[in-house]
Image 1 (spheres, one colour):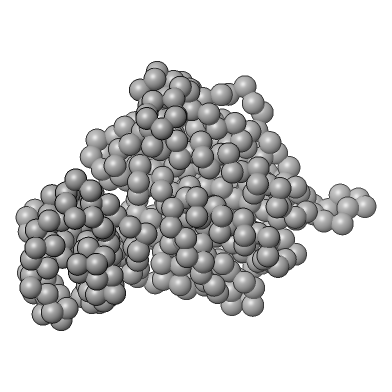
Image 2: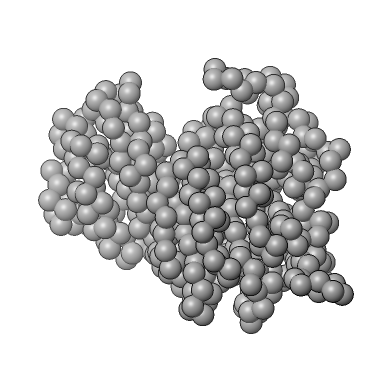
Length: 424
């Protein structure tokens, strides 16, 4: 039975979504703009990366081609290579451009309702929510209470937080409440307890997530966020491919923050991992040991958290090149019927204004020893990913999505071939 490996390159958009103007994101293209900046020498950085974006393995799988087809951009992209994967790109049906909505939709569950959001004012949080949080978490008060970049507000208020013991509470354009606190001066367990209380309080306001943001350092000059982050996410409102598949008795392995994103619904085991390098190591390890029929789901968070939100073009480019160098190791571990789907959940164009996600089309690259190459074009929903996987696994059709992969068993073959199909 096939194993399914899903790798989400968090925030790697490939061009403006059809409704991007509604979000103020018309013209955004995460990968296209990174490649163009590298080509013009604007993304050179101390540490060795310089010149054109060098991602030969991702290009071989079709990433450059889908970026061009989705956006029309080609500067810095190698379009001479004929993709050796089934490839296309997808638009999002869900109403938001947040991480849970993107992940749930790719697993067959679009978010057709509006999350609650905190207004762009100071203070941005309802007074009853903050007062109850202070009371129940036994806090001396809170700092922040506004829309902010996480790294910037920690740099600005971190020293006051250490001095007063008041955690930093802030939000963004997403449906989220975030709490930042020092791992030792405030305590990681105390931070997680505070976030659990905040999550319970925020549900009244239809807030999707509460995120703990631990950091270390003693002054604004050396504060840095750590890997002790934890997300408290509203559970999916209906079954996803993960919960359906796990319910049939199959292992569903979440790596990194995947478990948090799905509120552990449909996750039979969760492998902790911090940055991209740890996540890739964990993914390779699971591929070495996971049995036939397993589903392995990894989210490469650094692209979004460290580089997209921080508008760090050079860092994003370097991280892409690092992952690209690791892809041959992943491919070497593939069994005959394994199917890999490489995609993204939204955009976060590091050349764009502000620090929020961007509403973009996402790449969808499907490959493996039994996957025929070819284009399946534009998909109208991320849910086509889940439907395609369900089809390959022989499951009942999901309520949403149209498969972009068919199966056939050539004469004399022991295993089926997955081939790209039209959405019509």
